Length: 366
Image 1 (spheres, rainbow, N blue to C red):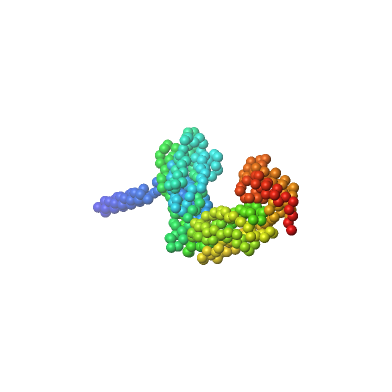
Image 2: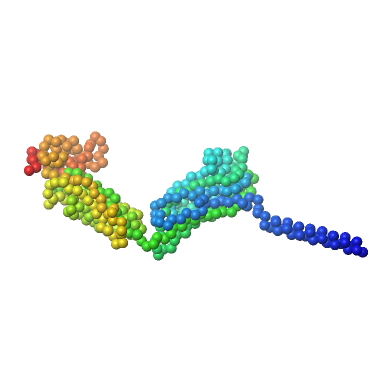
């Protein structure tokens, strides 16, 4: 009887061990990752942050397939927020035969999807190898994409937390079966700037003429820029030495620039050398005023007809008019445009300019 109990106990113990083994096996089946489950399609780097104004700055991310086995094709779609980012360019790294960091081997099945929609902020790329290409194994870059920041939030706007979202990804092996994988999106954070910054600047100043006949006009062009992150309306004034020539108001949104045309009427200005300067009036809250002015150099207000400003109207002046006669801005060769010879400032060198020099011929500056 004791022997039968011992045998029965041994059997029960055996059954218990078997049940425990089966339990662990069933758990292992549940928790064991599916083959290829460690494969990841990801955006690299996963996080890009801007604490300062990033408007206009560019950055590049790579979309990679990590730790894949028997890859033979992919179909990947990416999207982004066009309020803050705009598409600049992209570059697909297929096949690996040509790009050491790429994916898939030759031969490749044509055609393949490579479609950017910059308006909606989406990109679709799909590609596959074909026999006798070997399967791809390991880690590689599918494509790089470059973006530019088009808007940086300013408080009280919140931080911009932008997802570079892999919203559809399919990987397949060499028999067309799907490859299980996970995805890792990218994140771009634009931290809201602490209040609007105010900064305007004069970036360029040019005078079309370096010699203007006394009482005649000359054209001046001033380029101004809003370098802050708030819209600005401000005054721009052009000076000849310390005398105001002309002023205009200009309104610019953040980051924009514009060229402003001024006309300098030299009536009332004595003959002599003048330094031309453009000044943008500081806007409220502006602290960087060092770039609010720009100087172009010297412009001579000369005796009428003295186009080379040497103090007399003579053959050299007639010769200069004759050489440029018939020309205008942008005139093709052999015509030679000389704005100093456009005495009446009408945009062409013609008989009227020649007549002015002829009328004053032989005069000397007292």
